[in-house]
Image 1 (cartoon, one colour):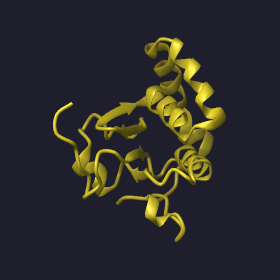
Image 2: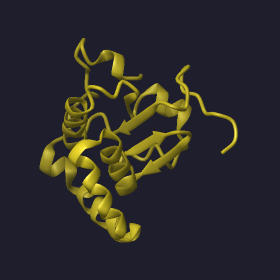
Image 3: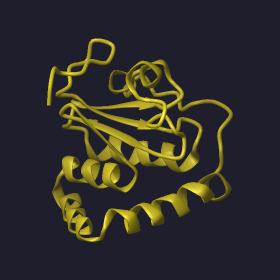
Image 4: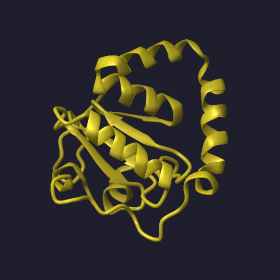
Length: 141
């Protein structure tokens, strides 16, 4: 795996969800994850448009049509990222792991279809999501 990767002083044992900060679906997903991961202080969030993503992710990973999940020194994108996040928040959400039996190219085709329509279906905000004061510690710039 090599040397640990760092993001603005955050060790690689942190789990970071990079998301499109202006996407309505993405913001709803972050709210969903915040509510279900209250005891997971190591699950952090950062918009793909932010400084952390600029310094930490490759150009390909910063594609606004995807979600990137950085976990234990590795990055995952698209459907794999979603499944890994759900697995990590635990509880009933671990059952989503069964979806891994579907080949990635099929999972990602579905993911890409939703990504193409997400602004139309869920809206697009003018600015990135502003975390509340109680959420602020869970967000990176």
